[in-house]
Structure formats: C-alpha cells, structure tokens
Image 1 (tube, protein in one colour):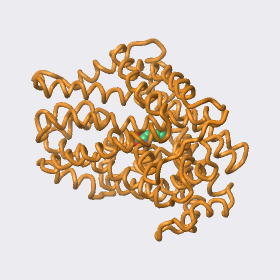
Image 2: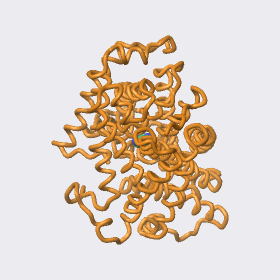
Image 3: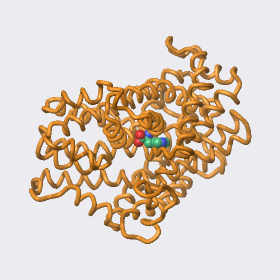
Image 4: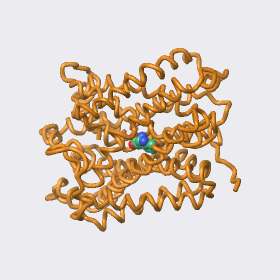
Length: 466
Ligand code: TRP
C-alpha cells in the first residue's frame, strides 16, 4: 500500500499548523490559572526563561527529527536515532491517545458555554443564576457530557480525515486569524477596564519573594504542555515539512506566537477579574474555574460589549482547542498510516473511534458513575486524583510528557551525531541569530537537567503538574 505521504503547502503552512497545535487550552485555560496560583510576575518571568531555554531547543529537536526522517513519531525516532527508540515514539503515541481522551472533554465545555452565552445574549443573563452551580450541573450531567465530547470528537475526526493539507493546514489557516482577531477585540475591551493596570502589574512586575520553588517547576512543566512537546506531535508535523525551510526560524515563530497568546489571554482575564471588587478573593478559591465559573457572568455585568464578546470568547476557546485536538489525533493516526500501512481514512476513523471510548470515560468522570468517577491511582487526601479524567491528566502531565521530553533531548543531544543535527539546523536557511553551538549546548545539558529535575521532583517530592 503506497499512499502519497502528506506535506504542507508552504513554509507558512507548517508554522500555522504547529502554532494551532501549540495554542490551545494550555494557553487560555491552564496558563492563566497557574499564573494566578503562583502570584504572577516572577512566575511569568521564569516561564519565559523556561520557554526560551528549554522549550525552544526541544521544539527544534523534535522538528528536525521529523523532517530528517520524513516519518511520524515511531518511524522517525527509529530511523534518526536507532531501532530501540521506536519505543519512545510509541510512548508518545500512547500519550497522545490519553491526552486527547480528556482534552476533548474540556473542549466540550467550551461548546456548552458558547451555546449558553449565545442564549444569554439573546434573552438576558438570568439574575439569580449561580455560575458555580451551573458548572457543577453541566459536568455531572452524563448525557450532556457525552454529547458535547462526541460533537468535538466528530469535528476532530473530520479534519484529520481530510489530511495534512486539506484538513489540518486548512483549518489552521482559517481559524488562527479569526482567533487572533477575537483576542484583539477582547484585549482592547479589557484594557479599557478599571482593573487593567492592576492586572498588568500583577503579570509583568516580578516579585521573587512571592515565587515558591514549586512554581519554578510548574513553569517548566507547563512550557512542555503549551508547546505540544514531549510526545512526538512536533516530530509528526516536522515530517511533513519541506527541506528548504529553516527549522530554527519556524520554531522561534511558533514559540513566540504561543507565548504571546498565553500572555494576552492572561491580561484579558485578569483585567476583568481585578475590575470587580471582591472578585480576586472569590477566584482564589476556584482558580481552575476561572474560565468557566468566574468569567461567564462577568461578560454580562462588567465587560464593555460583553454580550457580544462573551459568545465570541467561547468560540475562540473551542477553535483553539480544535486546532490542538487535530494534532493530537494526527500523532495516533499517522502512526497507523506510516507503521501499519493503513489508509488515512480508515486510520483516522479507527484511532478517533478508539480514543472516543476513553473520552467517554473522561466525560463521565464527574457524573455519578461507578469506577469512572471513583477510580483512584494517584495522590492521597486533598491531592487525590479521583476519576479517569484526573488520573489521565495526572499521568500525562507528570509522567508521560516529562519522560518523553527527556528521551527526546537525549536522542537529539547525545545519540544523534553532530553531523546529523547540524545538517538539519544549519543549511543556509537559518536566521542570523541562530547559533548551532548554542543549541547543542542547551539540548545536551540545559534541557536534560531541567527536565530531569521535573522527573525527580515528581518521583521524590510529590510535586504535581496536572
Ligand atoms: N499545546 C496544547 C495546549 O496548549 C496542548 C498539547 C499538549 C498538545 N501536547 C500536545 C496539543 C500535543 C497537540 C499535540 O493546549
């Protein structure tokens, strides 16, 4: 069976698709709340350093492994590094599988809030509505959760089904500009609010007295998640890339865009929160709920043009999530295509269908369902991970992404030859700021030590990244 392998239509195609993968719930949901939990400023600065010193070099490593071999995760690592390294690729495929299973559920919530905000815009925000209760009611509604995630799964499958150019690249091309436009509107509106000054100070004025050591690790762990690293997604996307494009330049652009969007989203949310008296205390008790509990009502009471921006905001979250879920599914699908010789159409439906079984488990984690909502493998007491959703998130964020990332730094820094990596990174297309020696130093020493610290802290110090 020799189906033509996919490729991007242009160098911009790769950048757009990879940026779409990187920008997702990590930027709009997770980054703002971990910034909140870690008291802003100093945490943000540390995060920026982690992105530049660890995220960027690993991003280049993944992309170069993919482009060099023109194969998806398993085949690429086998060919570029050695047969045993196929296992690392396989680890990535499993990671994509598990991550997608619960990521889709959160994406489904954004669909719920999109329809809700549309309704409120049409008929007015109900005066006596408690958004905390609304959130609790929707997550524990089994039928609703399965329907929402089924909807999102179908959307994801439909995109991947059409392949690299007509599916993945095309939706990134259409959705990313829309996403940027909506964020810009929201930013303008948020900066006009009374709390914007306080928000900017909170985010950009570092106060190292307020940063706990665990915040440092959290920043590092999140830089993996937000850049879609550690599981072969960027290897896979890199494998569809052309030879006459600079890996360093493309990677830097992706990393900058992802970081910019995370910061803009945080400025927007915090401007709203600081504008409302007492809101900061209220959010403190439910940071995870910021996006789905604190914000929905505020669009109707505080935000200028909120009735319009509310629904737009939740569409934005859904679009950002979709460009991420397609790349997750692509990791699993491309494995079946490249390693098992299955056609794309079949492979997409098979992998999407199999993952959906686990998505159902994640979707039912907050409903009263035996085992799924009570299973308990990790953590004790207050930090216990109960239910498949939390279990999967814990396993992926604490174990799978860091170990996968560590293996990739080893592969690119120590197991591949200097000629092999230099040949990909230095080919006449690289930008002037790029220095191969510097990259090599970061990938051999800085990145493995940093990622190793994550693994050690998870194993021995009970640090939790989920
Ligand atoms: N980067 C995505 C986000 O910030 C999440 C993610 C992590 C991801 N790993 C991935 C997406 C791999 C696609 C592929 O939301």
